[in-house]
Each structure stands twice: as C-alpha cells, then as structure tokens.
Length: 128
Image: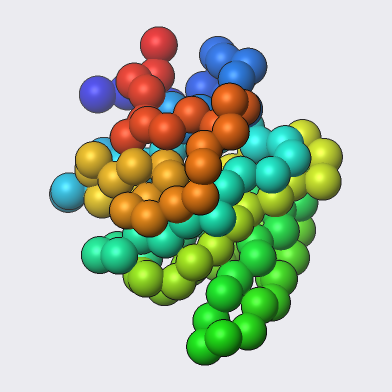
C-alpha cells in the first residue's frame, strides 16, 4: 500500500463521466472522475451518494417532494444526495470530483433516464 496522489490519478485518464477507483474504505469505493456537461437523471434506491469537488464547479439538480432545485458546489465543497433522491449532476466547465459510494454501485443508479454515449454506466474502473 502506497499513498495515491489525486492529481496523478486524475492525470492518468481523459474520459469524462467515467470514474476511477483510487481507494477502498470498508465496503466503499473512493472514486475520482472528470466531468463536463450533463450526466443523466438517476436515483440510488439503497445508498446515499457523496460528492467532493476537487476542481471546478458542479451543479446537482434534485427532484424532491414534487419540486426541483439545483445545488451549486464550488471547488472544495461537499454534498450528499440522500438515497432514493432523483438527481442529475452537471458541470458547466471541466471539473474534477471525488465520490464515495458502496462498492458495486452503478454510476447511473438503480433507476435512470436513457444513458447518453458520453456517460459511462459503470461501477468504477481500476486506476491504472
């Protein structure tokens, strides 16, 4: 086991919306991803989803109790989307994020709209 530089991990790939697993904590994956543009409306029925913005700015639209709102996360901000909440991340410019989710959690959740080609529906890729 050696320390992992998040900068080096992010420099090792270019594909957006395609997270890399940088560490594991108990039964959770720590993932980093490059994001730009829109993801897809989706929900994780059995788990919360934790976001940390490493660089850039992330917007997360949320559908809750029949209403829709958007939270804006500048660099250094954290936010947790509660389980079962429909949400759609969006980055107005290239952004780097860190995610914490149970191992095996799909990036498009348990329920989702049609997945566009630029979104990788994965449980995370091994960091090379």
